[in-house]
Image (tube, rainbow, N blue to C red):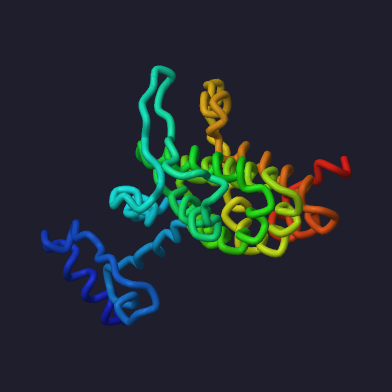
Length: 244
């Protein structure tokens, strides 16, 4: 006794259009997946490590419109940022978050203006920096969420500079580790395997995994007694640089 499926298979095997017919790709968990000559589509990639190119920052808009009190000066030693007003008289609650917002920039002169501007503000800020820390968390988080290696390195270096800039800043950042550290945890051990080749980004200090490790150690050193346990909670593979 031949069932219906075997009957039609036997009939069609000599018909040219049925011999090499490619299977149809159909969605999973549908009635189509039960049909003849079909294969289920593969699940989509989650894109966990996929970089997300950022939109132009608010810093760029303010700089091009002339709102920021800075200018780019070209001297014999290279480009330099010129301040139109005394840095000590600036409102740090207004300008420091604005410069941190520009950390997503990868094009010059914006990237240069952001990094040099943050460095100048942190060098002259002193006690004005600590009250502004909560306003810096969202720009830092936004920059890290891009997962672009260049932006990650810039943000981590600025975070190192921020922690060292004034007393108690490292301790003030500890409650925000849950917002700052998810992406560093993701990329901390993601090194490029070149075999016997040389990764020149490590020599330039542009390797994201190395900069993240260095930043975590600085956060632990300056974050007080609760820093390590909070880092360990968010980055389970991190080992203390103080206890060892």
